[in-house]
Length: 155
Ligand SMILES: [Zn+2]
Image (tube, rainbow, N blue to C red; front, side):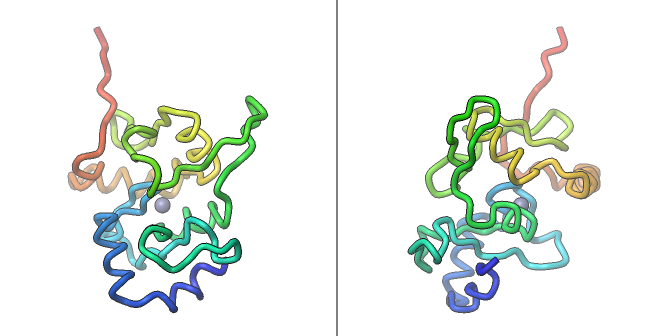
């Protein structure tokens, strides 16, 4: 949980650059910071305790819940296969290659092992966030512009 206090060391300018690069979305669950009561946190991808630095390439924008759930983890042992699978890393991976929105915009559906382990570990479809997404769908500000959405083929 060092990220929050350490983020004070990161200059305001750098924090703003991280926000803009992320288009103000949590880089994991794609919740938009603009519609939240609290600002998101600046997360270290490689934790500072493991030598990660306060530089642009090691930082990402994360909502409080994704930050807390990820903690300092960068990989997880997959219970299904016993293999170690990396968690989604927004600097190394493209969101749209690993995740897609369900047709109703409520659920993040994983497309890959990295996506699946990240949905599970960060609980990207937690109940509280489903309510937020539902409300945002109604006012047409969710899913975020440019995100892939699964289209049903009901023929
Ligand atoms: Zn999040």
